[in-house]
Image 1 (cartoon, rainbow, N blue to C red):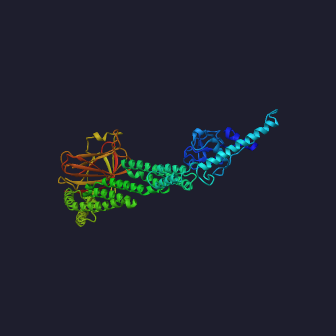
Image 2: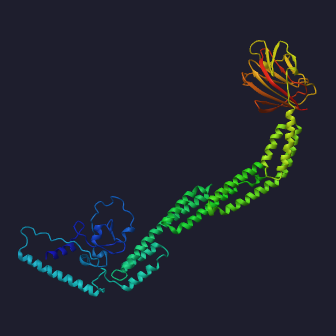
Image 3: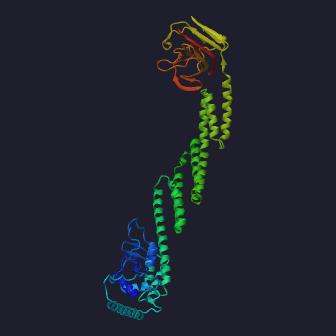
Length: 555
């Protein structure tokens, strides 16, 4: 009798603080949740709601510490909360219902001291028996009228096999079609409708499949959204290939989480790669192909695009074919321009030879042969080079080394000594004369083999400044000879360093004078001089040396 009273007590007053678990139902699908499922953590709670083991995995994570006192809590539903059963029937089912679960019960609290008499106790016991008999009778009546044989093996009431079948077949028909969310909703409805029928286990399995499909659908949509974003950014970028790594990452994730997107991502990567290669190809200016320098730039640009296309694999196939056509186009354009280019170049070389710019012509022909190697004019260019080389050889052999006997001396008080091809000049005088402003050029030596008929010629020599320098005068026989001072650095920073040999070269042709210092050709100067030989001049305080003087008459 005490056991019976404990059951009644728990049915009436069982609450969250009691050591047992009351029967509760899933707030999502309506399925019964056993106390053992809550104890083991298979079922879940969110606030005052409960979720069965099938629905719990689809819940979002709960914030840590949201319900620190929730562990072991239960919920007792009032009859108005569900139309399925009364509270008493539910608790009885929890004690020996369809899922084989049990509800913990406790003994009734002991009577307080000085409580009921033995007669009262006997009356209560008899009353308990009567109540229990009534409950058992009510349950038996519900089992008979509610249909469902086998003692309610699925714990459901009012089971309708036809409805269960229709719901299951409807949910199964959505497999792999349309939205996974719609499929899951239909599967959960089938699960509720099929409790207590032969479709119950099938519906539970269907719910699991639909949940897995929904998870897969959500992963796929997330990757698809990232693909749309990356594709848009890549297409707007100056260099779309900067996004190649992002596409590769999406491919890796899709192979793992969204296989249906792999082909789509690969196609997007191929499109972006093709667009990037076309951008590179469009930047190659084919109009430059008619000149050697431009042709080299075009070929280098096309080679870079071809390399990128080859590394892109199938995505670069179209561009690779276009590059091959562009290379042929550049070759044809350059080849068509070489005849005209050679005709113009030949005129320029002949003019150089006429102007006695033999060294310049020699350097120019070497560059032309290099630029047009392998073309139709290569043979012509080499023949022209031989002509220029012969002229240069004759030109080089026309140099004349100047020795002591070749000089006419008008020294005055200037001291001059010879040591082979070296001459030493020295003039006594005050320290630091302003050589630039000197007008007394009476102290000089003149190249005696030149006369008034000399107009255009070269003079090379080396000079060494010890104290103060001197000058060299060009075309001294005519009016307005050209004077070139070689002096130590002055206040303006002009001049040559002292204490070292410096090579100087002078070329006078027509009204132009060109000077080279240390083998480096400087700018041209206008010269009013007309004709005649050249002289070295000393001034008061001058002290310098000159050696290896040579001269070449041009005309």
